[in-house]
Image (cartoon, rainbow, N blue to C red):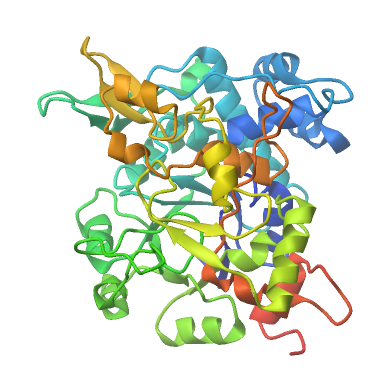
Length: 475
């Protein structure tokens, strides 16, 4: 298989939307859509009136029209909801999801991949987080129904995913072990999905996408390449300066005077060990330049994954005013990215870009009313009755403690789910008519995104990024 040199990162919630992925894919590289919380994205886009009619066009190609019709009727608002009206809620992820939630998840992933692949024969991938386990199976199936070419997954150890892809490609039921805090070692909880439930009992064989695990260490890569059956197909090796969630530093956690995790030599990937595995790999984190690409190729990599540069281009889902602020900060040389060790409910360090009016402002973060009404990063645990229940360190503290949570886990936590949706213009409206504040994530390379601007321009396109990376644009 001829792999691309450049992978456009699958960023945030709908930052890497279908428009961005398509713009990269038609240029011969790998465009990637983000599958994180995509069911909420579809539901809210429909409530905004399906501007442009793109969703309706994708739904017309879904193989089970009855499902498309049910979701459309449940969420579509002709002309869009009133600006001050809140978005209609959707079911939260759970080990035993409702039929309506399964249909929404499958359909949302289908729509995003379908639109990214529409009208060309380029490659399209989807990015998912291993930490967000509960929607994974229907998400993968929905993407595969639309012909997704690659699946990328990080933020955990995705050792079960290659086998799951094999099962779904054959139309067989699939299961995925769910991490449940407090569960006895002799008990196991699984998420289960049967494609026949969606396809009215029919068995449909699908193309099996290439699976790339996003990792930061050779030791994890060795497990995924040699001790998994089947093994992964390749790797994206992510440095800690990349945006979004970062792997924690190895060893005891130490913080700088500013409060950021300290990374050392043990956190530098050993490329020699990756080369020994004989699988293709791409380098990510601070590689968004022609020099970065050339260095990766010289080191034996297939190419690079680039996120931050694409995150602020014209086609990305980030609100235009946020992109403009980030670009102006880059021009002025005062961009700053804070690796926050406590912001994410996952406990993983999380990159936060300093943008006025966002959760990067401590006052805005501290004054936000704590609420967990999306639930993607909730932790599954065993409650007093012995059943699987859910809690989140970013929910109201009293609720979290009542569920057996440790108060120390609540300190500094931000609602990543709501913040990321707000970043792409899908923030919830609260009772006081305020809109959820955005949470903008970016890699350290945010300082340099101004290099993609052409003379006299204040925005840049995905094509501009690719031209610069491939050496086709003037310096």
